[in-house]
Image (cartoon, rainbow, N blue to C red; front, side, top):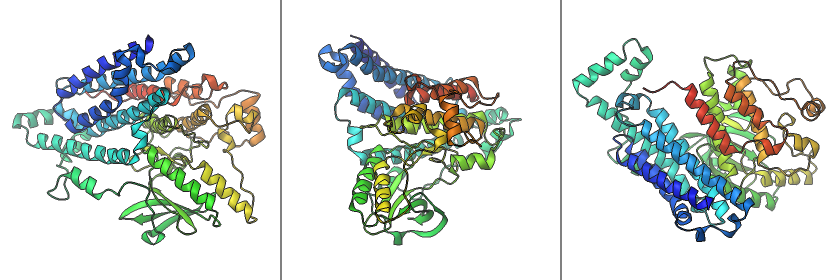
Length: 501
């Protein structure tokens, strides 16, 4: 049976991955963590590989077999890429100097593979109809994000230490290699052992300082130095200092409607469960007194639309936003969307626009506004109940898919999110605002009657253009799923990035 064969191929590939992990010289902590996450996924796959008897009944029919084979095939392809990635870090093919100079890029790849493992695990468990342990224990997921950061810092510290302890000949070879390359010289001059805050193990400090598991109630009195005050859809938004860190705060009045509190707490806990480094992190809430608060991590550069408006109004600023960075930002967003669509149960965003993607100081992009649809509905209802101006639900017209233009009551689903994300990627590629100068009726005609797609810049890489067009397909059946978008963007990024050696 195809399911058993796929499972057996996965088991065989994982054995090869483990062999490579045993041979590593550097990034041992990241390798170890990756192995642990693969181990979490393997029991279900090994059971499938052992006998056809363990294949669920619903996977034996043709339709079920097709549905079941897709996540297994995705896992197999992911493991093959992980195997190749670890092979690229081989000490002979990839000198230690390059590991040192590109440590951040290597860490980024480890992060992405960990994220994909979690998404693939969720998708597999959905097909199996079994409990997904990753989803059931959010505090375990949250600790993993902290562990990844500590692992990366420790591995970089080891690399820098090895560099400074290297032989004189090694230092000479490195200096010759850097001749004429000012950027590399600067990087080498700045290589210093990362400081530790005390003599204790940095990993132990990280765990000790973590906020205890569970949804935190953050009293408004704990928030200081408020700034960047803005009026949002339901209340005030601002930034503030909390526990010596800048945070983003959304406040709103509930008019003492108990249903708002119930929906908010339920959806906030769901967001904690989702925990992903590509989704803006929820730090806590305040529901003990009106106005209620949602406290999120702070993203310094603001939303994607603001970033594009400030540095790339016409899509030609290739110095600040080269194609490599644009593709990476699109990949970041796709990873967040992929995690949402593959959690249990799946989460539809329902309002994918360039305003919900936020960018930090390192140009990393994360998706926000996740999972609070019921809360927003309750707030709108409570505001109407006291005579406030009617608040309408619905997506910005610039991002509406053809099927929703045809039927406004069309139930939000994954292809609708994908269509909207195609428009967002068009913005990343062009720097422009979608359908600028057109009103709603003109946009509707453009999408439904003309069935047109907004044109992309001639300089846009061919594979990026094709992906954006595929996401904007008129027929939702022809649009790629989020996992496919991730795969295609990773391949495109690899072709754009300079080779390491």
